[in-house]
Length: 230
Image 1 (spheres, rainbow, N blue to C red):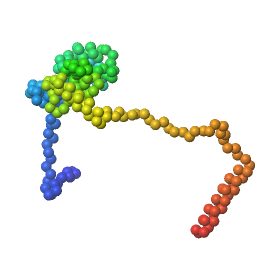
Image 2: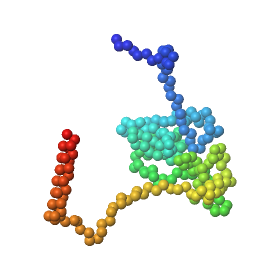
Image 3: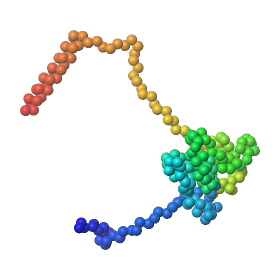
Image 4: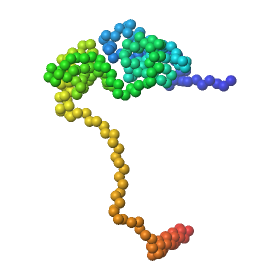
């Protein structure tokens, strides 16, 4: 029988194999949850995801999941976006089949509803809302956006705090300028301009003779160099 290799430690002792421990399951918090307010029951509900609702006519499992861009349904390779995080726990198989019976809508262009409405700016009369963006929650008046700071929670946000964050963002932009947008324009390939009326050079007997003489001179020079090296 072939010998089983034994792994040794740096001190020469036999290395013990660690038992394969199961990986701990993790789940992301919903947009309305914070570490200070989440409960044990909330954690259990989150860990129950993804939730299998049943199967479709093709035999694919239909699951409801919470992804990076929000809640969605998945059946095989076909996924459908859900409109509310509550549907993660209330969605039924019949509702999912009804969604899949309709043509798939393009995700782009569908704006997410605001997480919270704070009220109107007393000066501009613009509504202040809180939305969920790529880098977290932010307050916006439709023109200026300001990211919520550490310690700001959705439940505790007021219009006064929203105005304070927007004022700070405007002051920063006034001092440093707005964030530059990356340009994706590709530089066009430059071509040398052709002069009007220019024609291709014509070959004559003299030019052909000169070209042949130059080639013969090069061959003679290379032959002399080869004889000297011998």
